[in-house]
Amino acid sequence: MKIKIEGADFHVEMCGNGTPLLLLHGFTGSSGTWMPFCESLGRHSYMICPDLPGHGKTVVEGGIGYFSIDSAARALKEILDGLGFEKVDVLGYSMGGRLALAFALTYPDLVGKLVLESASPGLESEEERQGRRMKDHELANFIKERGIGPFVDYWENIPLFKSLQLMPDTVKQAVRKQRLENSPDGLANSLIGMGTGAQPSYWERLPELEAEVLLLAGGLDQKFCGIAERMSERMKSGKALIVEAAGHAIHVENPEKFGTIVSGFLTHT
Image 1: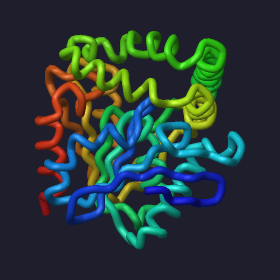
Image 2: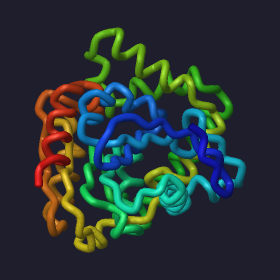
Image 3: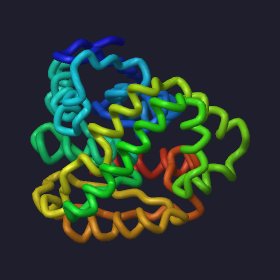
Image 4: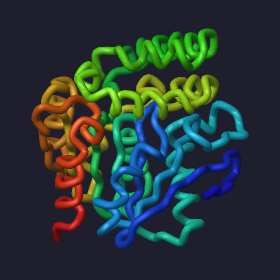
């Protein structure tokens, strides 16, 4: 369905029954990321899956400011308000995990449980953020100049997704198809507005989180394993769980294990 808010026309997919669960996809993904989990997670959760700004069928009518992580968090609140939800569990992957964290810190009363898959609180120093912003702008220009095809060719071969390349062709083709359905301008604006370089650091704010938090990382993704462990140490109620033989995209590389872990966490009281 379409949900119009100021500055954007959001496409949102919904399925399942039970406690509302807001699911936020990663960079180059879409709401389709979560549709394979309608049967498993949908048994206990009413899944709310928006296409984030710059992705899928969501159309942003405003300027680059509407692509910031703060603006995206406000938009999510408006969507939930419009749907009549006062409290939701939240699951975010990678870029969506950074947004999920920002949302939980901005609107703590709206969040029940929080699942962060291969997510980060951002870069700790301004020097690191400045360097990352330069790289994000360069990549955004690459997308605009070369188009979506050459960008996806590049993106699916970066080291972060090395283990994903070991998956069956049907899985890789499904991921590629989803990536190719995004627009070059949308992805470029997302990089500039919501990239890791543009995001403020949330490291010092992690102790503020009151929600119970599950931090997932793939055992083959050593960088994010370390980040998850460090994050859990700063949280009041955070647990890091490493999924062996999986990389950055756990939900793609081992969907059955991912669904079982998430279901167990969300339904445990």
